[in-house]
Image 1 (cartoon, rainbow, N blue to C red):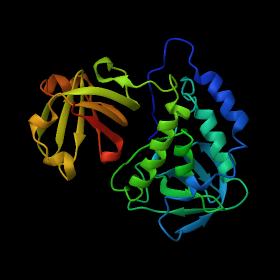
Image 2: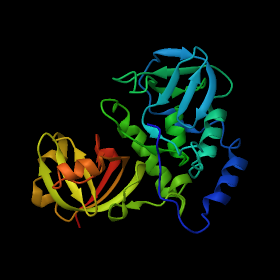
Image 3: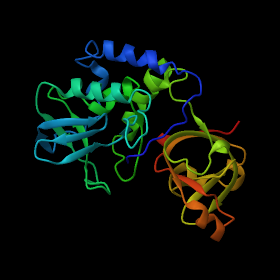
Image 4: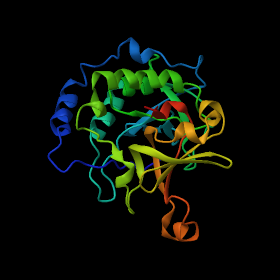
Length: 276
């Protein structure tokens, strides 16, 4: 979970001035209000000491372990010649301030490690406040829901919805523009906020929603989405948050009937559907 690449606006983006505003106000935002106190799993599994905040959603603990927050994805800092994404530095600064002043408590969900070997956990500061909820409430992260760590997905989605209604952070106009499925091209990838229209729906082990352009969405056959038939999906407008995977030109030459790009959807909380 390291590549996150939204489409940058061609004109000078308003997040430049917004970033200065967030830096100036970040201390005033702490200690966090009641919004960050929710989204708990009961008693913590461990108490740990923070060594360093690597970015808004990744921590280095004093014992050498790296920890990735469950349920959030913050903008990516500058790396490998790529510039920082909007509000990436503000998200890291917020996390540093929020966790300052004492040891942390962490709670695990179902999977405790990701494919990079990092711990996956929910993080609470010494006041018992949820870091994920605080980041989402201030619009400094997107809510993501990756199976099987979905225990707090509903709670976290409410904090993101609140920030979106208020136009905070990444939800402020022009800060993080949604990418259109029809505009996806070779070389695109990473974390996206994507919009498109369903052209076809197919089933095998998954439900596949083929959008306009070279993108398909992969959903589980369980839950409400799995009960809808092909006609129900036809023409639906979709907004989705997730990682855009490029299967490459060789894949499409072997399977020309399939879309080159796909996004895996594990939860209803990362997809918005309009059938109007």
